[in-house]
Amino acid sequence: MKVTVDQDKCCGAGTCVMLAPDVFDQRDEDGIVVLLDAQPTEQLHGIIREAASVCPAAAIWVSEEP
Image (tube, rainbow, N blue to C red; front, top):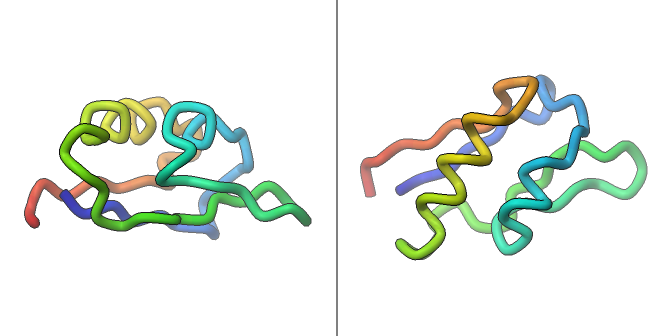
């Protein structure tokens, strides 16, 4: 799995950080998403798919290709 984020689309809701804090963080100054791990371990794949699906700005993309 490969994860990408679009910081320009991010609205700073923080749902991704709450679901997967090992993969996502937020900038202190404005709450915009910061990607910590673009290729997370398999055990995190399900929660990352959930984070992408609930992102209100659709700022997270998941590719199933390694």
